[in-house]
Image (cartoon, rainbow, N blue to C red):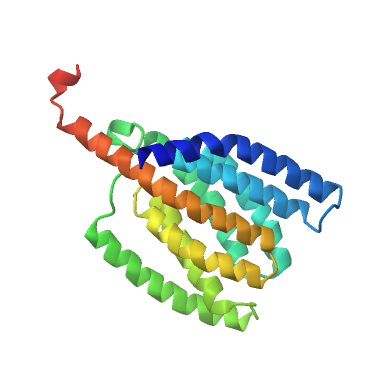
Amino acid sequence: MRRFTRAVSSAALPAAVVISTALILASTEHWIELQLTEVLAFITGGVCVWLIVKQNIWNWPIGIANDLFFVVLFLQARLFADMSLQVVYVFLGFLGWFWWLNGGREATELTVSRVSPAQCVVLVILAAAATYGGTLYLQSVKDSAPFLDALTTVLSLIAQYMLTRKYIENWWVWISADVIYIGLYAYKHLYLTSVLYGIFLSMCIVGLLQWTQSMQQDRRQDLVPATTRA
């Protein structure tokens, strides 16, 4: 399994450069019908998730740029909840940036951990209530897919919160949201964005595996006596 994750990681960067260059050229030269905003959202989104998988702090500024591109894209597509979600992401991006650097023991870097059972119960209740309320509101403003838009918005907010705290369960929530997003964006004819979320889905699986390894390694180090580590 480790060989698989290392192979995916080593191949990701050169593949990303080639794909990104081709998409920008295709958009600017009008070889195919693609919005430059969607292309830039595609590129920054892919890079951001890859950096999250690697637990690289630079995922946060790149992710904030990605959020701003999606604000414009979703406004054009009349996916108002997803548009609003990106605005919240910008705030959470700055918060996550701070927490990853200073949220650990004695204001050190955070390490991967698990969400507590009590937090899990609270998040499930909040998710159900927010999805119900969000669906009613989106129906009132003529959203094009009120229930799915509300559900994916809520799942994404929960996953993003978990990500800012480096809870490993964030990957399971992202996987659930991405499966729905793939179909929703294809339905809205945002085919490139749908493909992007398919890539996100595969990267989430890799991220889950790598973060699991990281958490296990941190636990083994915690079991080593301080005198031995010194």
